[in-house]
Length: 126
Image (cartoon, rainbow, N blue to C red; front, side, top):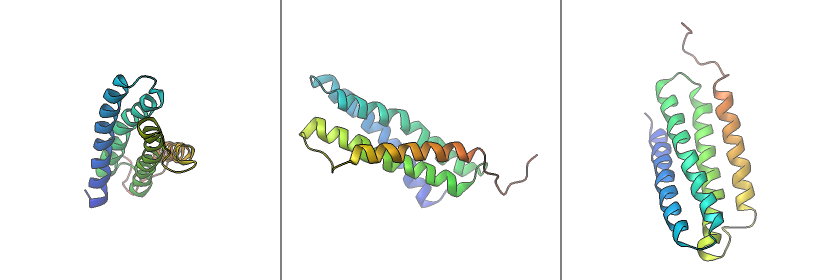
C-alpha cells in the first residue's frame, strides 16, 4: 500500500469520525439541519472511500482511476460538508460556492467509482 493510499484510508476513517461528531453536535443544536446533512454525507461516504482504497490494494480495479475516485470523494466531502458545518457552527461559509463545488466533485467521484468497474486492469481474467 502506498503512502497516498494510506493517506486516503486515514481520511476515509477521519470522515467517519467527523460524521459521528457532527451527528452528536447536531443533536444538541436546535435547527441544525445543515449540520445533520453534513454528518450524513460524511458517514455515507467514509465506507466508500475505505472500500475504494481496499480495491486499489487488491489490484482488481484500475489503480489510478480508483485512487482518483477516492480522492475526489475526499475533496468533495471536505468542501461540501466543511461548508455546511462551518455555516451551521459559525454562521459563515467556507468560501463562496464551496458546497455546490464539493457536490459536483462528489458526483464526479461517484462517476469515477462506477467507471472503475468497467476499466480493465493489467491482471488477466480467469
